[in-house]
Length: 82
Image (cartoon, rainbow, N blue to C red):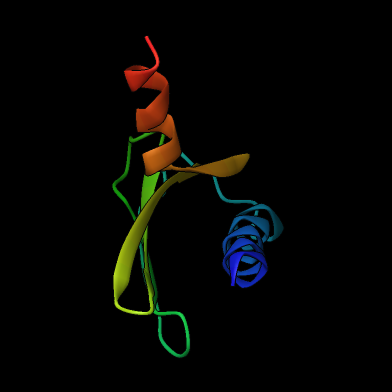
């Protein structure tokens, strides 16, 4: 499942590069349906976007830009480690 999530996200990011889009100047509101429902949301001017993935009824969230992505839960664990 993790590999499938990774592949979909990286394909979305690859599409940004293939379309020569300026990430910060572009807004995204994309939905993918199927085995892994997923949404990509970013407003114009933002440097990060939000990905929401539904896995077996569980909602997981990621932040992304044109260089990659991170799971929000893992980023929050860094705060708790302080």
